[in-house]
Length: 204
Image 1 (cartoon, rainbow, N blue to C red):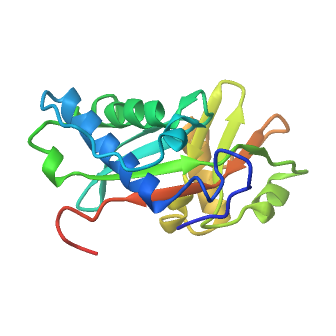
Image 2: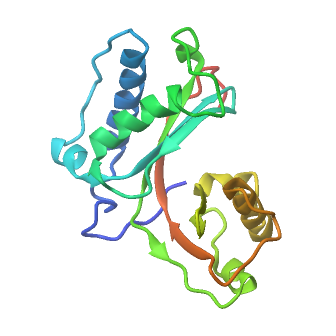
């Protein structure tokens, strides 16, 4: 899934090249390997300016199609290079849903790096209005209500293609009932430009 980007932003299509994607994947894998005690020099071919520009990303780890870790940033607070390195290690070692990744697992672990566009507030009059505005397969969504907060990347639409189901699971992820709604709910949306490795098991 590749989405359009607004020229002049860190998400500009000219910046998000396949060469950049390959470099980010190499950086992510090398960072995890080094954190596990096996130092690897990352092969970086992208323009250094693109890597040093502010950026926000999510790093997702899978094994034979099953989630093994996912950590990311919603706002660009550091260079894209630093964000990928930090989130890769966090996805491997700090995702509390899973035991820390081991060096033995790394060769059978697939990595995906998703670079986020800037956030956009989603104004709405009701839940029905919000659901009608969502773009399945395109929008990543941030749900907020008081101290409750959650997000789903656009890739989650593959498992939850209906907007109502997508929102219900997003609320449950935040720790609220699936049927919860309140005037204080705030929604933001974003797009991503994802790159992923060829699956380690050789499947398409």
